[in-house]
Length: 136
Image (cartoon, rainbow, N blue to C red):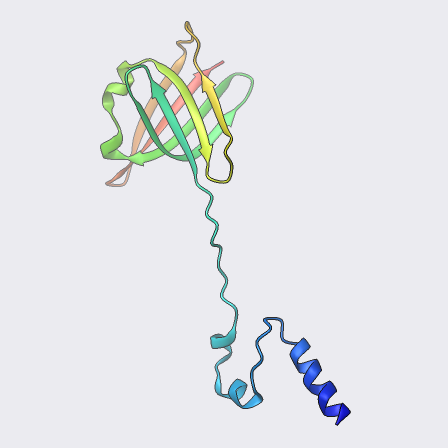
């Protein structure tokens, strides 16, 4: 009887998901039915807000680069949220927010910092890419 107990104990310990299944049921199941599902429930969003004197826009951060000479920020947003009057407005702030943290990165323009270029391109029927380049 000890050998049978030991055999069953080894079978249970060999089961990493802690699911005890009889040998008969195991033979009836397809291995795909009992394989663990791979899931990544945590999605981290990174958004960017671009604020101007009169208005602002926000969207998903596509790319960001910063070096000694310039800051480049590209965001994706719905075309209908892109306000063309932004190009006549003065940039005030860029703020990057992530859903993984309460912290945010921000770059505020000071009076006299006028060296910012803003361009946009269309990505498909519904999305636009807004690119902001600030010379340091």
